[in-house]
Amino acid sequence: MTAARFQNPVFVALDTPDLSKARELARLVRGAAGGLKVGLEFITAQGPSGIREIAAFGLPLFVDVKFHDIPNTVAGASRELVKLGAKLFNIHVSGGEAMMRASVEAARAVDPDVKVIGVTVLTSLEDRDLESVGQRSPAQDQVVRLAKLAKHSGLDGVVCSPREIAPVRAACGPDFLIVTPGVRPKGADLADQRRVMTPGEAARAGADIVVIGRPITMAPDPAAAARAIAAEIAQLA
Image (tube, rainbow, N blue to C red; front, side, top):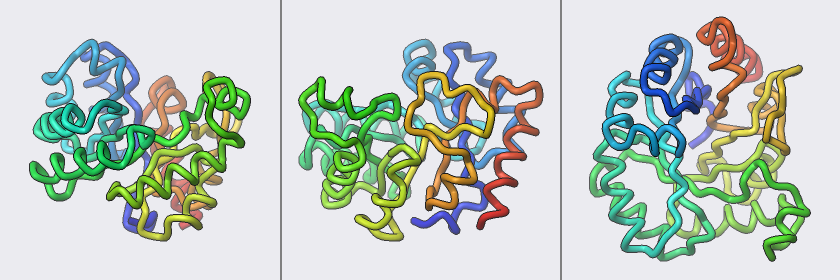
């Protein structure tokens, strides 16, 4: 899948445990965003019913669960997640080929159009962090290595930082979905992200989806912030 197939690649991260706040943010950005994302903080607080409520807004929903377990367990979890309305979700590539294939098979039995993507290297990690846990650095090499494994294992794409978009695209081809967190408009606080780019830079590099949280959700006008970022990306299309 290539970026040109997304009319609006901006997915807004509803990173809050508060259901009312998440619903309000979803309502505000519904006409300005291309999709929504919920993560572990929200899922832990609100559970399956919370996922259903956000999916009901009608935007494609990325459920950021990062599954990593034995194949049978991940297959069962993937199946149930898609039943809740997830259109996109992620699993750790480091779980191995059997786990990835089991997840894809189970998810597509529920919804043939669901996208399953792999987590490569978390965008909060730097080279020294990889070395401390026994993984090879530099981060870019590890990301590309895992992206190739994800493609071989039947995944639709990967999550990677903006810095790895170009080498992943070169290694995995134009139809491989690249979902990119770690995107910050110029002047925005980097918070816990490290390997970052602006939305325009990420789009120019070839990102299919950019996941943006605080620069949109904490803006005085979240819809205006989302539209401004989408416009910046569209100028480069």
